[in-house]
Length: 90
Length: 406
Image (tube, rainbow over the protein chains, first blue to last red):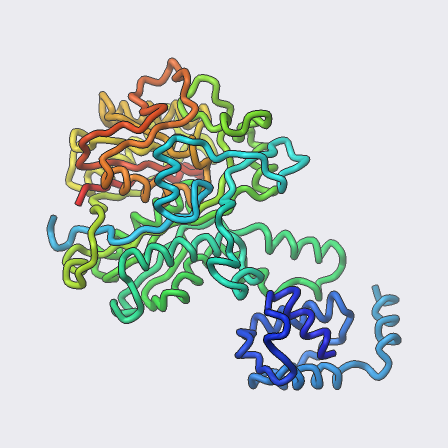
């Protein structure tokens, strides 16, 4: 999850690889509320992650590792099954 | 000039002619067209445009601005930063509540295009949250206000090809009414998107000179076949002269008059006799307390559509009888729709400063229905006190600005 976050921040947002790590806070990366929503959109649409309606846990300038932990904690128990359900729903 | 006269204390430009005001001016003064093949338009009936290739949003604005906004906002930001620096408008130099921002814009198509694609793919979850704030017409002004810390009135003007000049005229009103002390005003557009190119082509408004793009934009020329799409932005810093003097800001020219008007004739075609344009020019003269004889030069709308060129020439004859020398900057820079009027306003200021009229490129044989002294081939040195800049947009929406030498 952390690698996915780091990859998206470098590829899509143009952040310099190696200049930040798990302990870097979002504000240091200039990731504001819109950037956070953009990040979640990419993870959901391109990487099939489940996004909960309630993301207040991400409000208080978390570190990247805290973001990764939160996103991991809200994924369904068996990710492939969730993906399969999504596919049949479409 | 009176204390209430509106002074131009800064200007910035990003165009196909260059990444800043000086490089744009030099390109226009050389009369060297910027239109060239545009890979983004490949496969369309028109495959060329005037793109601001020298402008790198990543380099000028940084990574945090590249993914979240359409190019027209990036262009506006770059031009506004240049204008603010030129005017010495660093934060803390003016009361932020008295600092306004008015930017002409059409709105972007890139963000909404990507969003439509997601909808068609049945992936609404993939629509970017930047779709609205990154593409709406008001957000050029919104982002410029944010960037400059301007807390006064901030808004967008959208009058198609007259947006940039409309914004500058309205900024003058905000200053004369003492609503603001300083207004950052201009226009911005990235009008060479595939959607714009395909759509304007359907209106038969564009030149299809794909084999020789540099010869395509030919205002007033008998062999013209339409206008050339472009992108670009220009921003002026405007303030009452007493305010400029109090903070020792340089005064480059005065914005002595400005007016808006509407043909109320047809959705896209101008009045054939130019009466709508003439009314707007006369209103601008009246606002300046001037007469036709006070105008030494006209920076025309000069879009190079047959309808515009004929209507504009007739309007100038109605107002002036014998019009002063004119030029058409779109021959070099193309037509950046909402940006064009502001770019031409900035170029009019530079024309007065340098006392040189830039040439109209590609004018080899003037349309024999047009009797104008068009400056062609090379720049013409001329003593000028006051110049008029005109813009005429779809919807019959017209604007005219009058600038006077400092």
